[in-house]
Image 1 (cartoon, one colour):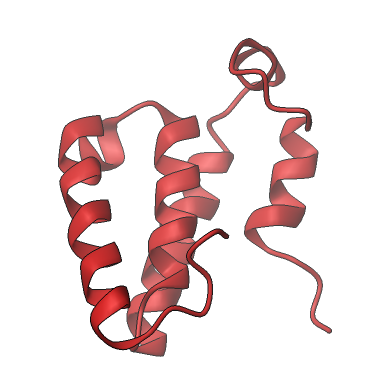
Image 2: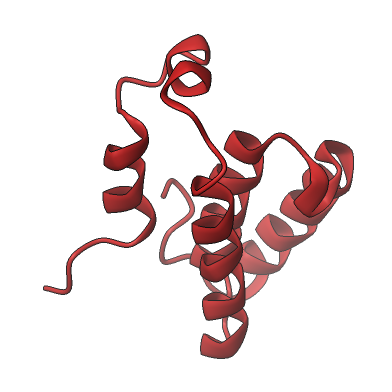
Length: 92
């Protein structure tokens, strides 16, 4: 969520950086924790709502593959269930 709300040139730069990282982690075949976090971040910098939804759906698919052991190993202070609230927060 660091990049949430960026637009214009900054959003373009963020998308380019995330695309490079996406390739580096192996895309959807990468570590599900990395895929989840990166896809969620990529969704936040999209100008098009359809693209934003596509990236959020990738994050949701990946979170379903993450175990509590993997989350703990990464030092994330949430359980897998807690990740769902980050990826798909309750509507305001």
